[in-house]
Image (tube, rainbow, N blue to C red; front, side, top):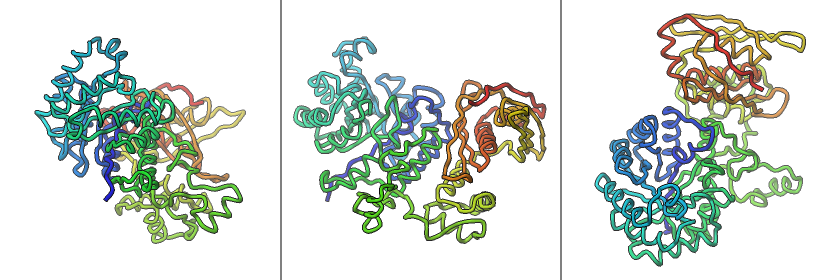
Length: 523
């Protein structure tokens, strides 16, 4: 039987460190549940000592996830280790992950300590963590730029102190596959007690080699890989989970290992991460990109029609993509049964209430669009499953604009208690006017940080999706909306973001007085 490689997902910790990403506790819980369904082995839920919000998120995930190990990160300091355990102690399978720099440049300029002092910190804090849980991981940060002999010495001592996993980070993406693989082989040869721990790797993508380095390490004997969905993370990102998993699965003849990941959940997990983080997946991204299983060349199309394997090394269904969908064309005449069957083919199981709302949205879209594609349905269902509890609901939006007209928008919003509030506003364009009208009703000061639009499908009747990122009271909130009318999609996105704000719920119960707020116009 093939060896198993442990998949350690750090999307919620290192992935969230991607510039511009800010996930709230509901987002993180949704992602954690999806990762559990994906069947990753370890979910690194966050860095509890870094902020009260991160502590709360790790605590919530630890209390929710039952089928995966839940890890928390801690730097090698007593307060950080204690905070990590306080957040994790409700987990069914808790792990404390301690990191400490070992490169000379980090020790001199960041830690301002010598090698002996750093060794003592590592030993002491691993032993402290071991007093809380039997599952302790240690990472010598910037290991790929460290003196190898010092790394071997540190690994031996932390394993003696109780570490059961030792993780080798290529923290700044400096290494290359041949060099990194040799480093891993040397660890097995030079660390006397290495048989008492799992050897893990954590590679960054600064030179575009995170996946290649991770796979080279697996061939050299590493049996845990730390990665992120869609390869997100600091700077150029981390090793991509989907690429690691599918490379090991597709080339099992070469690697001779397996993972416990349910690959059929990869596509939907990837879409969820993209939607909640606001990081768009490039079309040519391996495994999950929009073009990954599409063929334009006539020669390729001819080969695919004759035998799929001529130009595809993976079956799209292995990552959860439907086999096609041409056999069931959906439109305005389609009924509930056909819609439900298409949802099942796409892998969605909705509650009765969710299905009713989704079907109503589907029929509304079908009145505007002759043929509904799978990507249209995925957008509708994505909106449905990501819907937050609505304090305010956009009931009507009416806009007038033109090259010789002042853009004017009227919004009618259903507020708590069944109240309907109507407000009009002018702006530099239809979206600006609509946003000002909505803000005048909701009355929570906020600043628009990002406004992006993409077409979900092709054609003049394409469904458009808008992502907005707004800031209020020092926090950032992401909202999404989809509609054939891009101004309506933008209004839905803003409402989605506003309904995520605690201040919105507070204001709803405090007063019905609405005060207009100023915001920059989206470009």
